[in-house]
Image (cartoon, rainbow, N blue to C red; front, side):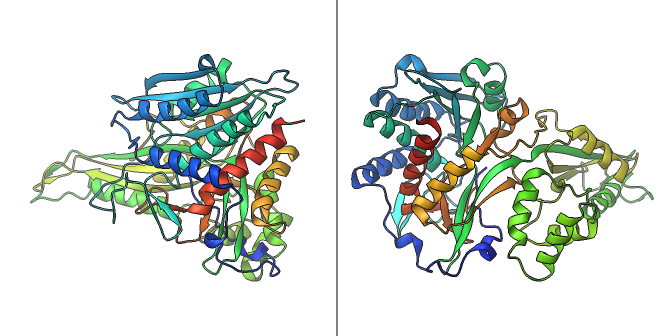
Amino acid sequence: MKRLFACALAALSTSAIAATNPVNVPSKLDAKGQAKTRAMLEQAIEVPSVMKRGNMPKMTELVANELKAAGIPAEDIKIIEHEGVPGDQTATLIARWRADMPTKKPMLILGHMDVVEAKREDWKFDPFEFREEGGYFLGRGTSDMKTGIVATTLAVTKLKQSGFKPNRDIILFFTGDEETAQNGALKGSTEWRNLTDSEFGLNADGGGGAYDRNGRPLGFGMDAAEKTYQTYFFTTHNPGGHSSRPRPDNAIYDLADALKKLQAHRFEPQLNDVTRLYLTERAKNEKGPLGDAMRRWLANPNDGAAADIIEANELEVGRTRTRCVATMLSGGHADNALPQSATATVNCRVMPGVQPKDVQAELQKLVGPNVEVKPDPSFTGKPTPVFPVRPDVLAAYAKAVRLIHGPDMQVIPTMTTGTTDANFFRSVGIPVYGADGGWGISPDDERAHGLDERIPVRAAYDDVVHWETMIRELAGD
């Protein structure tokens, strides 16, 4: 999961910042670094690391070879093959840059090497052919998130080769199934914990920023909290019969009634420490009804009407509460028979700290006893706490962002409404922060998981500088 932090931060941008096209601004990465980044990103994009294609060994080898060439010992680079979704063999890479004389606990850097499938007939060009045109790199994974894999890997190798001496071990944890089963993250946070245990984590699959089409900065967000992913199945049953003799009850109609109830339902709004920080900053400059609602809700967390106004804004959807939505349907068995069953897939993004079983109970109460509500047995979401925002991490992130984008660029902690591998580490007590430096033009470049995915060339180069700065700040004396 990776998307630009576009949101509504335009209100926070100062008019003093010149509105120029950021795509055309030179990167702070030197020419040698740019050539290295482009070459590795090209190789990464042209590996179709998609579920069940069997290409994950090529991706892990690409990363491992870069680390070995920089002087990371082979014994500190582990490639663990394991099952992702049933029938799909994938792999996770765990590499450790050992500090000579560590004075702090290790720091974990997370990312994922797999990408969502892309069909050639849907795209304007081959999605797995790396392209550069119009100031952009194009191809599946440029945004989500092979640029992040390249940037973190090259930041580590560049620092290693420069003679930088970290004061803590730096662990790279790159999975091959974040877009599917997330078994790599589950195992990494549990049975492989001896390889990943750390004081905190930085997630290259979270955070980031944006500019609008006029070049005005929209700000950067550091993900400091994350929702829990959980899917449920709504199923109705019926004796059925011949379609020439309709009965008053019908499995499809009963399911449709349940889905209309879901469409109208709103879970109880919740403020947490991170969303409070976010809304406090937003409310300073937001005008009109939305700004008024933010200020009212901050003053009174029991003001559900104010939270509803915030939730209704298209850029704030999911920030105030758990949200569930129907995503797939199936039902019936013949066009001339009454349906004996019908099922809807309902995907929920659950607020931090809320148990998925409690959401299931609320959904069951909503739709009534004649609709069966069960969680997806193949994936059980892990509720995560909201950790305090670490001042050192926020300061390092802000420094890296402003080094590249100027001293006035707004940086705000936020809660991502999506789910990443970080969720599993948060659930076992390791605070993780989405801290990538990627950016794009909103909404034009918001193409993760979509057609003709791309990222500005400068953003790909900037991300290496961003991660180099972050690592120096958090692992240097």
